[in-house]
Length: 571
Image (tube, rainbow, N blue to C red; front, side):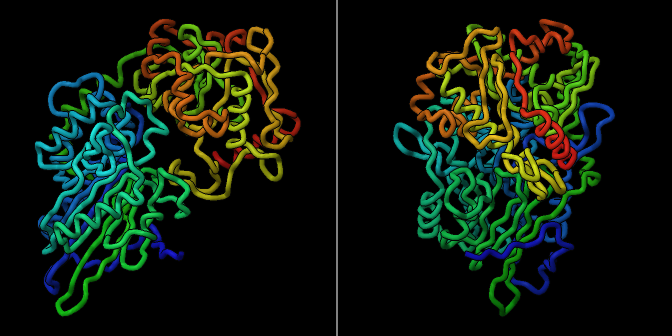
Protein backbone atom coordinates (compact mmCIF):
# COMPACT_ATOMS: atom_id res chain seq x y z
CA UNK A 1 0.00 0.00 0.00
CA UNK A 2 1.43 3.38 -1.02
CA UNK A 3 0.85 6.59 0.87
CA UNK A 4 1.52 10.12 -0.22
CA UNK A 5 3.56 11.73 2.54
CA UNK A 6 3.70 15.51 2.55
CA UNK A 7 7.00 17.14 3.58
CA UNK A 8 6.79 18.83 6.95
CA UNK A 9 6.99 22.56 7.45
CA UNK A 10 6.23 23.43 3.84
CA UNK A 11 6.36 27.01 2.82
CA UNK A 12 2.73 28.08 2.84
CA UNK A 13 0.58 25.69 0.91
CA UNK A 14 -1.61 27.48 -1.57
CA UNK A 15 -4.50 27.51 0.85
CA UNK A 16 -6.85 30.41 0.27
CA UNK A 17 -7.86 32.10 3.50
CA UNK A 18 -10.54 34.11 1.73
CA UNK A 19 -14.03 32.91 0.93
CA UNK A 20 -14.60 35.39 -1.90
CA UNK A 21 -14.59 32.84 -4.73
CA UNK A 22 -15.73 29.80 -2.77
CA UNK A 23 -19.05 28.53 -1.55
CA UNK A 24 -17.63 26.64 1.43
CA UNK A 25 -14.25 26.77 3.20
CA UNK A 26 -13.51 24.86 6.39
CA UNK A 27 -10.21 25.11 8.30
CA UNK A 28 -9.55 22.31 10.79
CA UNK A 29 -6.71 23.00 13.24
CA UNK A 30 -5.37 20.19 15.42
CA UNK A 31 -3.08 19.82 18.41
CA UNK A 32 -2.11 16.76 20.43
CA UNK A 33 0.33 15.60 23.11
CA UNK A 34 0.51 19.12 24.51
CA UNK A 35 1.53 17.55 27.85
CA UNK A 36 0.89 20.65 29.91
CA UNK A 37 2.80 23.09 27.68
CA UNK A 38 0.47 25.90 28.60
CA UNK A 39 2.94 28.73 29.18
CA UNK A 40 5.64 30.15 26.92
CA UNK A 41 7.78 31.35 29.82
CA UNK A 42 10.03 29.01 31.82
CA UNK A 43 9.44 28.57 35.53
CA UNK A 44 13.17 28.89 36.27
CA UNK A 45 15.25 31.93 35.35
CA UNK A 46 17.94 31.33 32.76
CA UNK A 47 15.90 28.85 30.75
CA UNK A 48 14.56 29.82 27.34
CA UNK A 49 10.98 30.37 26.25
CA UNK A 50 9.19 27.56 24.43
CA UNK A 51 6.23 26.88 22.20
CA UNK A 52 3.00 26.54 24.12
CA UNK A 53 -0.74 26.94 23.94
CA UNK A 54 0.03 30.67 24.04
CA UNK A 55 1.67 30.28 20.61
CA UNK A 56 -1.17 28.13 19.32
CA UNK A 57 -3.78 30.67 20.40
CA UNK A 58 -1.97 33.52 18.64
CA UNK A 59 -1.87 31.51 15.39
CA UNK A 60 -5.45 30.27 15.60
CA UNK A 61 -6.71 33.72 16.49
CA UNK A 62 -5.03 35.20 13.41
CA UNK A 63 -6.60 32.46 11.29
CA UNK A 64 -10.05 33.13 12.74
CA UNK A 65 -9.63 36.84 12.07
CA UNK A 66 -8.62 36.13 8.46
CA UNK A 67 -11.27 33.60 7.50
CA UNK A 68 -14.00 34.05 10.09
CA UNK A 69 -14.39 32.08 13.30
CA UNK A 70 -17.42 30.32 11.82
CA UNK A 71 -15.04 28.64 9.34
CA UNK A 72 -12.56 27.22 11.86
CA UNK A 73 -12.77 24.00 13.89
CA UNK A 74 -10.18 23.51 16.68
CA UNK A 75 -9.50 19.99 17.96
CA UNK A 76 -7.06 18.32 20.37
CA UNK A 77 -6.07 14.65 20.17
CA UNK A 78 -5.23 14.03 23.82
CA UNK A 79 -2.47 13.73 26.43
CA UNK A 80 -3.31 17.06 27.95
CA UNK A 81 -3.20 16.45 31.70
CA UNK A 82 0.32 15.19 32.37
CA UNK A 83 3.89 16.07 31.48
CA UNK A 84 4.61 19.47 33.04
CA UNK A 85 4.73 21.19 36.41
CA UNK A 86 1.43 23.01 35.89
CA UNK A 87 -0.91 20.04 35.36
CA UNK A 88 0.86 18.12 38.14
CA UNK A 89 0.27 20.99 40.56
CA UNK A 90 -3.40 21.31 39.69
CA UNK A 91 -3.99 17.56 39.45
CA UNK A 92 -2.67 16.74 42.91
CA UNK A 93 -1.75 19.82 44.96
CA UNK A 94 -4.31 22.56 44.34
CA UNK A 95 -7.40 20.61 43.33
CA UNK A 96 -10.11 23.13 44.20
CA UNK A 97 -12.23 24.88 41.59
CA UNK A 98 -12.13 24.61 37.83
CA UNK A 99 -9.07 22.84 36.47
CA UNK A 100 -6.79 25.31 34.60
CA UNK A 101 -6.68 22.95 31.61
CA UNK A 102 -10.43 23.44 31.27
CA UNK A 103 -9.89 27.19 31.57
CA UNK A 104 -7.30 27.14 28.77
CA UNK A 105 -9.41 24.98 26.47
CA UNK A 106 -12.53 27.08 26.95
CA UNK A 107 -10.60 30.37 26.60
CA UNK A 108 -9.11 29.17 23.29
CA UNK A 109 -12.54 27.97 22.14
CA UNK A 110 -11.54 24.41 21.39
CA UNK A 111 -14.43 22.44 19.95
CA UNK A 112 -13.52 18.90 21.08
CA UNK A 113 -10.77 16.97 22.86
CA UNK A 114 -9.90 13.27 22.69
CA UNK A 115 -8.83 11.38 25.80
CA UNK A 116 -5.17 10.28 25.88
CA UNK A 117 -3.45 7.55 27.86
CA UNK A 118 -1.61 10.11 30.00
CA UNK A 119 -4.96 11.70 30.77
CA UNK A 120 -6.21 8.36 32.08
CA UNK A 121 -2.97 7.92 34.03
CA UNK A 122 -3.88 10.89 36.23
CA UNK A 123 -6.62 8.76 37.81
CA UNK A 124 -10.39 8.92 38.09
CA UNK A 125 -10.56 11.96 40.40
CA UNK A 126 -8.70 14.07 37.83
CA UNK A 127 -10.07 13.00 34.46
CA UNK A 128 -13.63 12.52 35.68
CA UNK A 129 -13.56 16.07 37.04
CA UNK A 130 -12.04 17.46 33.84
CA UNK A 131 -14.59 15.63 31.67
CA UNK A 132 -17.48 17.08 33.69
CA UNK A 133 -16.04 20.60 33.66
CA UNK A 134 -15.37 20.51 29.92
CA UNK A 135 -18.91 19.29 29.37
CA UNK A 136 -20.22 22.31 31.26
CA UNK A 137 -18.54 24.44 28.57
CA UNK A 138 -20.04 22.33 25.78
CA UNK A 139 -16.68 20.73 24.96
CA UNK A 140 -16.71 16.91 24.80
CA UNK A 141 -13.79 14.91 26.25
CA UNK A 142 -14.20 11.99 23.87
CA UNK A 143 -13.29 8.32 23.77
CA UNK A 144 -15.91 6.22 22.00
CA UNK A 145 -13.88 3.01 22.36
CA UNK A 146 -13.64 3.38 26.16
CA UNK A 147 -16.66 1.48 27.50
CA UNK A 148 -17.98 0.69 30.94
CA UNK A 149 -17.01 -2.75 32.19
CA UNK A 150 -20.43 -3.40 33.70
CA UNK A 151 -22.73 -2.63 30.77
CA UNK A 152 -20.60 -1.82 27.70
CA UNK A 153 -21.94 1.74 27.40
CA UNK A 154 -19.47 4.48 26.43
CA UNK A 155 -17.67 5.94 29.44
CA UNK A 156 -16.89 9.24 27.69
CA UNK A 157 -18.76 11.26 25.05
CA UNK A 158 -18.44 9.66 21.62
CA UNK A 159 -18.97 12.28 18.91
CA UNK A 160 -20.31 15.75 18.26
CA UNK A 161 -21.74 17.50 15.20
CA UNK A 162 -20.75 21.05 14.27
CA UNK A 163 -21.85 23.56 11.63
CA UNK A 164 -18.68 25.19 10.31
CA UNK A 165 -17.56 26.59 6.98
CA UNK A 166 -20.91 25.84 5.41
CA UNK A 167 -20.55 22.14 6.25
CA UNK A 168 -22.17 19.78 8.68
CA UNK A 169 -19.12 18.26 10.40
CA UNK A 170 -19.16 15.15 12.61
CA UNK A 171 -16.16 14.59 14.89
CA UNK A 172 -15.72 11.11 16.38
CA UNK A 173 -13.32 10.89 19.34
CA UNK A 174 -11.32 7.76 20.20
CA UNK A 175 -8.64 6.97 22.73
CA UNK A 176 -5.67 4.62 22.85
CA UNK A 177 -6.81 1.01 23.21
CA UNK A 178 -3.58 -0.21 24.83
CA UNK A 179 -4.15 1.39 28.25
CA UNK A 180 -4.16 -1.80 30.27
CA UNK A 181 -0.71 -2.74 28.97
CA UNK A 182 0.78 0.33 30.68
CA UNK A 183 -1.43 1.54 33.49
CA UNK A 184 -2.35 0.02 36.81
CA UNK A 185 -5.92 -1.10 37.40
CA UNK A 186 -6.98 1.63 39.88
CA UNK A 187 -6.59 4.42 37.32
CA UNK A 188 -8.83 2.77 34.69
CA UNK A 189 -11.10 0.73 36.97
CA UNK A 190 -14.51 0.16 35.47
CA UNK A 191 -13.40 0.86 31.89
CA UNK A 192 -12.53 -1.45 28.99
CA UNK A 193 -10.77 -0.23 25.85
CA UNK A 194 -11.64 -1.57 22.40
CA UNK A 195 -9.22 -1.77 19.50
CA UNK A 196 -9.73 1.06 17.03
CA UNK A 197 -10.18 -1.59 14.37
CA UNK A 198 -13.07 -2.30 13.85
CA UNK A 199 -14.49 0.08 16.50
CA UNK A 200 -13.72 3.26 14.53
CA UNK A 201 -15.44 2.04 11.36
CA UNK A 202 -18.48 0.84 13.31
CA UNK A 203 -18.91 4.29 14.82
CA UNK A 204 -18.30 6.06 11.50
CA UNK A 205 -20.98 3.93 9.83
CA UNK A 206 -23.41 4.64 12.66
CA UNK A 207 -22.78 8.39 12.57
CA UNK A 208 -23.09 8.56 8.78
CA UNK A 209 -26.48 6.86 8.87
CA UNK A 210 -27.82 8.94 11.76
CA UNK A 211 -26.30 12.37 11.11
CA UNK A 212 -25.54 12.37 7.36
CA UNK A 213 -22.54 14.72 7.80
CA UNK A 214 -20.85 16.54 4.92
CA UNK A 215 -17.45 16.06 6.58
CA UNK A 216 -16.40 13.12 8.78
CA UNK A 217 -13.45 13.61 11.15
CA UNK A 218 -11.92 10.86 13.31
CA UNK A 219 -9.97 12.35 16.23
CA UNK A 220 -7.90 9.67 17.91
CA UNK A 221 -5.13 9.37 20.45
CA UNK A 222 -3.24 6.76 18.46
CA UNK A 223 0.22 6.88 16.95
CA UNK A 224 0.92 6.88 13.22
CA UNK A 225 2.58 3.44 13.32
CA UNK A 226 3.92 1.49 10.36
CA UNK A 227 0.61 0.33 8.90
CA UNK A 228 1.42 -3.33 9.49
CA UNK A 229 -1.40 -3.97 11.96
CA UNK A 230 1.05 -5.10 14.62
CA UNK A 231 1.05 -2.26 17.15
CA UNK A 232 -2.14 -1.69 19.12
CA UNK A 233 -1.03 1.72 20.43
CA UNK A 234 -0.22 3.11 16.97
CA UNK A 235 -3.01 2.32 14.52
CA UNK A 236 -2.96 5.52 12.48
CA UNK A 237 -1.81 4.06 9.16
CA UNK A 238 -3.85 0.92 9.86
CA UNK A 239 -6.92 3.13 10.05
CA UNK A 240 -5.93 5.17 6.99
CA UNK A 241 -5.75 2.09 4.81
CA UNK A 242 -9.06 0.63 6.06
CA UNK A 243 -11.44 3.45 7.01
CA UNK A 244 -14.28 4.23 4.64
CA UNK A 245 -16.33 7.39 4.66
CA UNK A 246 -13.75 9.51 6.53
CA UNK A 247 -12.33 12.81 5.31
CA UNK A 248 -9.75 13.56 8.03
CA UNK A 249 -8.00 11.25 10.49
CA UNK A 250 -6.23 13.08 13.32
CA UNK A 251 -3.55 11.11 15.21
CA UNK A 252 -1.22 11.78 18.15
CA UNK A 253 0.50 9.75 20.92
CA UNK A 254 3.84 9.03 19.22
CA UNK A 255 5.03 12.66 18.96
CA UNK A 256 5.74 11.99 15.29
CA UNK A 257 4.66 14.82 12.95
CA UNK A 258 3.27 13.35 9.75
CA UNK A 259 0.82 14.01 6.95
CA UNK A 260 -0.45 11.33 4.57
CA UNK A 261 -3.27 10.93 2.08
CA UNK A 262 -4.99 7.87 0.65
CA UNK A 263 -8.02 7.85 -1.63
CA UNK A 264 -9.14 11.29 -0.51
CA UNK A 265 -8.77 10.63 3.22
CA UNK A 266 -6.06 12.68 4.92
CA UNK A 267 -4.17 11.74 8.07
CA UNK A 268 -2.39 14.34 10.16
CA UNK A 269 -0.29 14.19 13.34
CA UNK A 270 1.08 17.53 14.55
CA UNK A 271 3.67 16.15 16.98
CA UNK A 272 4.00 17.23 20.59
CA UNK A 273 4.17 20.08 23.10
CA UNK A 274 2.54 22.70 20.90
CA UNK A 275 5.55 22.78 18.59
CA UNK A 276 3.24 22.54 15.58
CA UNK A 277 -0.39 22.46 14.66
CA UNK A 278 -2.02 20.32 12.03
CA UNK A 279 -3.95 22.38 9.49
CA UNK A 280 -6.42 20.94 6.98
CA UNK A 281 -8.52 22.97 4.58
CA UNK A 282 -11.65 21.72 2.83
CA UNK A 283 -12.86 24.05 0.10
CA UNK A 284 -15.32 24.00 -2.75
CA UNK A 285 -14.81 26.69 -5.41
CA UNK A 286 -17.96 27.59 -7.25
CA UNK A 287 -18.85 25.04 -9.88
CA UNK A 288 -16.06 22.66 -8.88
CA UNK A 289 -15.69 19.53 -6.79
CA UNK A 290 -14.67 19.70 -3.15
CA UNK A 291 -10.92 19.87 -2.50
CA UNK A 292 -8.83 19.13 0.57
CA UNK A 293 -5.22 19.81 1.53
CA UNK A 294 -3.28 19.47 4.78
CA UNK A 295 -0.02 20.66 6.27
CA UNK A 296 2.00 20.89 9.45
CA UNK A 297 2.55 24.45 10.63
CA UNK A 298 5.45 25.27 12.95
CA UNK A 299 4.54 27.53 15.89
CA UNK A 300 6.62 30.57 16.77
CA UNK A 301 7.48 30.68 20.48
CA UNK A 302 7.94 34.45 20.23
CA UNK A 303 4.45 35.09 18.88
CA UNK A 304 2.00 34.79 21.74
CA UNK A 305 -1.26 36.44 22.73
CA UNK A 306 -0.51 39.14 25.33
CA UNK A 307 -4.09 39.26 26.55
CA UNK A 308 -4.03 35.50 27.12
CA UNK A 309 -0.73 35.78 29.03
CA UNK A 310 -2.17 38.44 31.29
CA UNK A 311 -5.35 36.42 31.83
CA UNK A 312 -3.48 33.30 32.98
CA UNK A 313 -0.65 35.08 34.81
CA UNK A 314 -2.00 34.25 38.30
CA UNK A 315 -1.95 30.54 37.47
CA UNK A 316 1.59 30.79 36.09
CA UNK A 317 2.79 32.64 39.21
CA UNK A 318 1.26 30.01 41.49
CA UNK A 319 2.91 27.14 39.60
CA UNK A 320 6.20 29.03 39.50
CA UNK A 321 6.18 29.52 43.29
CA UNK A 322 5.56 25.81 43.77
CA UNK A 323 8.27 24.94 41.25
CA UNK A 324 10.93 27.10 42.89
CA UNK A 325 10.51 25.79 46.45
CA UNK A 326 13.79 24.34 47.83
CA UNK A 327 14.00 20.58 48.19
CA UNK A 328 17.55 19.90 49.34
CA UNK A 329 21.17 19.92 48.25
CA UNK A 330 23.00 17.87 45.63
CA UNK A 331 26.74 17.34 46.02
CA UNK A 332 27.33 16.36 42.38
CA UNK A 333 25.71 16.88 39.00
CA UNK A 334 23.17 14.35 37.75
CA UNK A 335 23.12 13.68 33.98
CA UNK A 336 20.48 11.34 32.62
CA UNK A 337 22.49 10.61 29.45
CA UNK A 338 25.11 8.85 31.58
CA UNK A 339 22.64 6.00 32.13
CA UNK A 340 23.10 4.76 28.53
CA UNK A 341 26.71 3.77 29.07
CA UNK A 342 26.57 2.14 32.50
CA UNK A 343 26.01 2.88 36.18
CA UNK A 344 25.66 6.56 37.05
CA UNK A 345 24.65 8.83 39.90
CA UNK A 346 21.30 9.60 38.31
CA UNK A 347 20.11 5.99 38.25
CA UNK A 348 21.84 5.23 41.55
CA UNK A 349 19.52 7.83 43.07
CA UNK A 350 16.40 6.21 41.59
CA UNK A 351 17.53 2.74 42.63
CA UNK A 352 18.38 3.88 46.16
CA UNK A 353 14.94 5.43 46.56
CA UNK A 354 13.20 2.31 45.27
CA UNK A 355 15.27 0.01 47.45
CA UNK A 356 14.28 2.11 50.45
CA UNK A 357 10.71 0.81 50.63
CA UNK A 358 10.07 -2.07 53.03
CA UNK A 359 11.04 -5.65 52.16
CA UNK A 360 12.46 -4.87 48.70
CA UNK A 361 15.55 -6.78 47.58
CA UNK A 362 16.07 -5.62 43.98
CA UNK A 363 15.21 -2.63 41.81
CA UNK A 364 14.57 -2.11 38.10
CA UNK A 365 14.78 1.42 36.68
CA UNK A 366 15.40 3.26 33.41
CA UNK A 367 16.31 6.85 32.44
CA UNK A 368 12.97 8.60 32.00
CA UNK A 369 14.36 11.94 30.85
CA UNK A 370 16.24 11.51 27.58
CA UNK A 371 18.89 14.16 28.18
CA UNK A 372 18.44 16.14 31.37
CA UNK A 373 20.79 17.65 33.92
CA UNK A 374 20.39 18.59 37.57
CA UNK A 375 23.31 20.73 38.61
CA UNK A 376 25.13 20.43 41.92
CA UNK A 377 23.97 22.81 44.63
CA UNK A 378 20.47 23.70 45.75
CA UNK A 379 17.77 21.43 44.37
CA UNK A 380 14.31 22.89 43.76
CA UNK A 381 11.06 21.11 43.05
CA UNK A 382 11.44 21.79 39.34
CA UNK A 383 14.42 19.43 39.37
CA UNK A 384 12.13 16.62 40.48
CA UNK A 385 10.55 16.72 37.02
CA UNK A 386 13.96 16.20 35.42
CA UNK A 387 14.75 13.32 37.76
CA UNK A 388 11.29 11.80 37.32
CA UNK A 389 8.97 13.34 34.70
CA UNK A 390 6.07 10.87 34.99
CA UNK A 391 3.47 10.17 37.67
CA UNK A 392 4.32 6.47 37.90
CA UNK A 393 3.77 4.76 41.21
CA UNK A 394 6.25 2.34 42.76
CA UNK A 395 5.17 -1.30 42.69
CA UNK A 396 6.82 -4.37 44.21
CA UNK A 397 6.58 -7.60 42.21
CA UNK A 398 7.60 -11.15 43.16
CA UNK A 399 9.90 -12.64 40.51
CA UNK A 400 11.95 -15.81 40.32
CA UNK A 401 15.67 -15.50 39.76
CA UNK A 402 15.37 -16.99 36.26
CA UNK A 403 12.66 -14.46 35.38
CA UNK A 404 14.88 -11.62 36.56
CA UNK A 405 17.66 -12.82 34.30
CA UNK A 406 15.30 -13.11 31.31
CA UNK A 407 13.89 -9.65 32.07
CA UNK A 408 17.37 -8.13 31.97
CA UNK A 409 18.30 -9.98 28.79
CA UNK A 410 15.21 -8.52 27.14
CA UNK A 411 15.99 -5.01 28.38
CA UNK A 412 19.60 -4.96 27.23
CA UNK A 413 18.68 -6.36 23.82
CA UNK A 414 16.59 -3.24 23.23
CA UNK A 415 19.56 -1.13 24.24
CA UNK A 416 22.67 -2.75 22.73
CA UNK A 417 23.62 -4.95 19.80
CA UNK A 418 26.45 -7.38 19.20
CA UNK A 419 29.23 -5.09 17.96
CA UNK A 420 29.53 -4.27 14.28
CA UNK A 421 29.94 -0.58 13.63
CA UNK A 422 28.07 0.19 16.84
CA UNK A 423 27.31 -1.29 20.25
CA UNK A 424 24.35 0.88 21.16
CA UNK A 425 21.20 0.34 19.09
CA UNK A 426 21.35 3.59 17.14
CA UNK A 427 20.47 4.66 13.61
CA UNK A 428 21.52 7.55 11.45
CA UNK A 429 18.01 8.99 11.51
CA UNK A 430 16.35 12.01 13.14
CA UNK A 431 14.00 11.47 16.05
CA UNK A 432 11.22 14.02 16.58
CA UNK A 433 10.55 12.53 20.02
CA UNK A 434 13.91 13.74 21.34
CA UNK A 435 14.80 16.45 18.85
CA UNK A 436 17.76 14.45 17.49
CA UNK A 437 18.71 15.78 14.06
CA UNK A 438 20.73 12.74 13.03
CA UNK A 439 21.78 9.81 15.19
CA UNK A 440 19.15 8.44 17.55
CA UNK A 441 18.27 5.31 19.51
CA UNK A 442 16.08 2.76 17.75
CA UNK A 443 13.96 2.24 20.84
CA UNK A 444 12.65 4.46 23.59
CA UNK A 445 15.20 5.03 26.28
CA UNK A 446 12.63 4.85 29.07
CA UNK A 447 12.62 1.10 28.36
CA UNK A 448 16.37 0.69 29.02
CA UNK A 449 16.07 -0.93 32.45
CA UNK A 450 19.06 -1.84 34.59
CA UNK A 451 19.00 -3.58 37.96
CA UNK A 452 20.20 -2.67 41.43
CA UNK A 453 20.74 -5.09 44.29
CA UNK A 454 22.77 -7.39 42.02
CA UNK A 455 26.35 -7.77 40.88
CA UNK A 456 26.36 -8.60 37.16
CA UNK A 457 27.96 -7.98 33.80
CA UNK A 458 26.57 -7.51 30.29
CA UNK A 459 28.81 -9.05 27.63
CA UNK A 460 28.30 -7.04 24.44
CA UNK A 461 30.09 -9.65 22.31
CA UNK A 462 27.56 -12.37 23.03
CA UNK A 463 24.24 -12.88 21.19
CA UNK A 464 20.92 -11.78 22.61
CA UNK A 465 19.70 -13.95 25.47
CA UNK A 466 23.16 -14.83 26.77
CA UNK A 467 24.69 -11.45 27.62
CA UNK A 468 23.77 -11.06 31.29
CA UNK A 469 25.89 -12.91 33.84
CA UNK A 470 24.72 -12.48 37.44
CA UNK A 471 27.48 -13.16 40.00
CA UNK A 472 25.66 -12.48 43.27
CA UNK A 473 23.32 -10.27 45.21
CA UNK A 474 24.69 -6.88 46.27
CA UNK A 475 25.64 -8.15 49.73
CA UNK A 476 27.70 -10.97 48.23
CA UNK A 477 25.21 -13.76 48.89
CA UNK A 478 24.38 -16.20 46.12
CA UNK A 479 21.82 -15.39 43.44
CA UNK A 480 19.53 -18.38 42.91
CA UNK A 481 17.61 -18.79 39.61
CA UNK A 482 14.97 -20.78 41.49
CA UNK A 483 14.57 -18.43 44.44
CA UNK A 484 11.96 -15.68 44.73
CA UNK A 485 12.87 -12.01 45.02
CA UNK A 486 10.84 -8.86 45.70
CA UNK A 487 11.61 -6.38 42.93
CA UNK A 488 10.73 -2.66 42.93
CA UNK A 489 9.67 -1.17 39.58
CA UNK A 490 7.34 1.43 38.11
CA UNK A 491 3.60 0.87 37.92
CA UNK A 492 4.02 1.24 34.14
CA UNK A 493 6.40 -1.69 34.04
CA UNK A 494 4.35 -3.73 36.53
CA UNK A 495 1.31 -3.27 34.28
CA UNK A 496 3.18 -4.81 31.34
CA UNK A 497 4.51 -1.58 29.83
CA UNK A 498 7.54 -2.09 27.59
CA UNK A 499 6.87 -5.88 27.49
CA UNK A 500 9.74 -6.62 29.88
CA UNK A 501 7.59 -8.82 32.08
CA UNK A 502 5.55 -10.30 29.23
CA UNK A 503 8.03 -10.88 26.39
CA UNK A 504 11.08 -10.89 28.69
CA UNK A 505 10.08 -12.74 31.85
CA UNK A 506 7.34 -14.68 29.96
CA UNK A 507 4.53 -13.79 32.36
CA UNK A 508 0.89 -13.34 31.41
CA UNK A 509 -1.03 -10.24 32.45
CA UNK A 510 -2.92 -12.35 34.97
CA UNK A 511 0.31 -13.72 36.46
CA UNK A 512 1.78 -10.22 36.75
CA UNK A 513 -1.26 -9.01 38.67
CA UNK A 514 -0.98 -11.97 41.06
CA UNK A 515 2.70 -11.23 41.65
CA UNK A 516 2.21 -7.60 42.80
CA UNK A 517 2.82 -7.54 46.55
CA UNK A 518 3.24 -3.83 47.23
CA UNK A 519 1.97 -0.48 45.96
CA UNK A 520 3.54 2.80 47.00
CA UNK A 521 3.12 6.50 46.11
CA UNK A 522 4.44 8.19 42.96
CA UNK A 523 8.16 7.71 42.54
CA UNK A 524 8.71 11.46 42.11
CA UNK A 525 7.15 11.97 45.53
CA UNK A 526 9.47 9.30 46.98
CA UNK A 527 12.49 11.07 45.46
CA UNK A 528 11.26 14.34 46.98
CA UNK A 529 10.90 12.73 50.40
CA UNK A 530 14.40 11.20 50.04
CA UNK A 531 15.88 14.69 49.61
CA UNK A 532 13.83 16.06 52.51
CA UNK A 533 15.01 13.20 54.74
CA UNK A 534 18.72 13.43 53.90
CA UNK A 535 19.09 17.13 53.19
CA UNK A 536 22.17 16.62 51.07
CA UNK A 537 22.48 13.81 48.55
CA UNK A 538 26.01 12.82 47.52
CA UNK A 539 27.58 10.02 45.51
CA UNK A 540 28.48 8.02 48.60
CA UNK A 541 24.90 8.07 49.92
CA UNK A 542 23.39 6.71 46.70
CA UNK A 543 26.40 4.62 45.67
CA UNK A 544 26.54 2.11 48.52
CA UNK A 545 27.57 -1.06 46.67
CA UNK A 546 26.28 -3.23 49.51
CA UNK A 547 22.82 -1.87 48.68
CA UNK A 548 22.74 -1.20 44.95
CA UNK A 549 25.41 -3.68 43.79
CA UNK A 550 27.18 -2.96 40.52
CA UNK A 551 27.13 -3.84 36.85
CA UNK A 552 29.33 -3.20 33.81
CA UNK A 553 29.43 -3.67 30.07
CA UNK A 554 32.20 -6.15 29.21
CA UNK A 555 34.70 -6.80 27.76
CA UNK A 556 35.67 -3.26 28.65
CA UNK A 557 38.37 -2.99 25.95
CA UNK A 558 35.66 -3.44 23.31
CA UNK A 559 32.59 -1.99 24.99
CA UNK A 560 33.96 1.23 26.48
CA UNK A 561 35.50 2.87 23.38
CA UNK A 562 32.65 1.83 21.09
CA UNK A 563 29.98 3.10 23.47
CA UNK A 564 31.91 6.34 23.86
CA UNK A 565 31.92 6.79 20.07
CA UNK A 566 28.20 5.99 19.85
CA UNK A 567 27.42 8.50 22.59
CA UNK A 568 29.36 11.19 20.73
CA UNK A 569 27.20 10.56 17.66
CA UNK A 570 23.95 10.85 19.63
CA UNK A 571 24.91 13.88 21.71
